[in-house]
Length: 277
Image 1 (cartoon, rainbow, N blue to C red):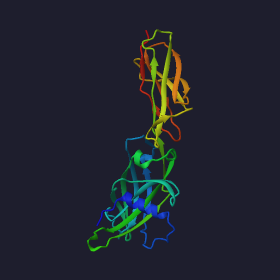
Image 2 (image 1 turned 90 degrees about the horizontal axis):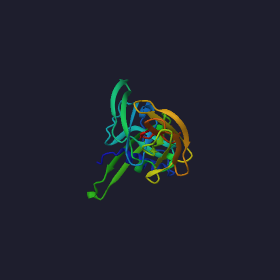
Image 3 (image 1 turned 60 degrees about the vertical axis):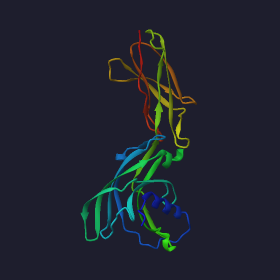
Image 4 (image 1 turned 180 degrees about the vertical axis):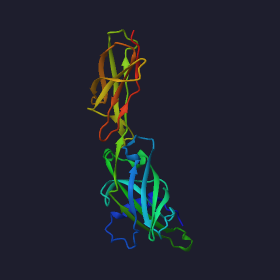
């Protein structure tokens, strides 16, 4: 018997949901997903190549006579974009969750569970529309496969169920911002030109693209100080470029800071040191 792959079960079930088929004949187990928290309640930020590990915790109540072994059946939490029945994208837990029994009755078992989403931008994210608020749901999948064809017969039986609207989580594009202050060194009272670039993850191309018409704050930290103060606000150009001038007054560090938007995470440049003589 083939082991159940959670992702394969979900993908197959969602593919079949597009067909006009009767309601499932197999009984769906009565599962209750509650108290779901994704990424500790914070937005998820994803770049273009690095996988992002996202912690998930939830409570699962199942029938006491149902054993979930993560070989022939599985249950877990997913996030999806769009409607539950016709989702535009789905990401589910990448491994078997760790669950601890917290309560039992004659008919039910309640467990406290933790899992991890491993979001791979090259595999899981496809377009700018993925940078939005995703809905949290729970799912159950079961599979029974016989792929031994020595008797000229194979079979595959599976079932799938999903429960939606168990919460929400924001998924954002990662941003990058650079800075360069010149000339170096510079005489006191002369003009310093501070340039940089603001870009954000483009999941369609797998690279960072210019983020245009966005405000970034130029900040300065004097040598020997731990605190940055705001100098002025600059708007990125059609190429994402940032540029402004300031008057040299004392040694210190300049950086650009981007506060972020509803679709894109915040970013800070590493301070660039200027020696004022």
